Length: 226
Image (cartoon, rainbow, N blue to C red; front, side, top):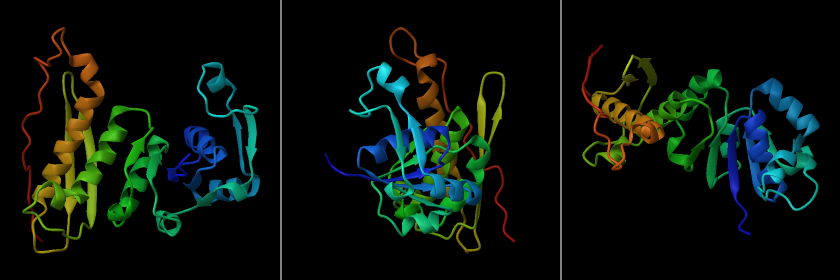
C-alpha cells in the first residue's frame, strides 16, 4: 500500500472520521485546528468508532472498529504555515464547519502554489464553490496563459440565492499596478461551474442534456483604482 501524506482542515466529526481512518491505516496525517481544539487533540489523541462504516461493508479496518489513535500517530497544528513544514502533501481534505470556511480560505491565499489537490467534504453547495473560486483566482495565470502572477491582497466570495438562480460575486484586490478583473472573472466562472457540477443531476433531462440550465451575465460590475 502506498503511504500518503494527507493534510486535513478540521478535526471535527468528519475530519476525525476520515482522517483518523487514514491514520489508522498507516498514512501520515496532519490536522489543522483552532488552538483550543488542537491542544485537546494533541493531549488526548483521536477516538474513532467505525462500527457503522463496517456494518455497511466499508473496509476501513480489519481489526476492531473501536480504536484510539495516540497523539504520536498524527500531527495537529494551528496554522497552514505550520502544517506545510510537514509537507509536501498528496491531498488536502477540507472538512471545516461552514462558519470557519471564510477564515480558512483567507489563510490559503499565500500558499496555494504549495497545496495539493483538494477534496471538499463540507455540507452545502456554496462551501465547495467558495473554495473553488479562491483556488481559481490564484490559478488564473495557468488557466489564462497571457495573465501573469500578481500579488492578491484581498479576496471575497459571496452568493445570492434567488428563486430560480444563484448569483456569485467575487471581489479581488491588489496593491499592484495590474488590474485583477481576470482573476475575479476566473473565480466567478469556476464557482458557478462547481455549482452546476453539484446540482446537475437535478437539471438533467431524459436525454442527458440541460435544456434550461445556463451560466450567464458574467461581467465586471466595478473596477476601481485608488
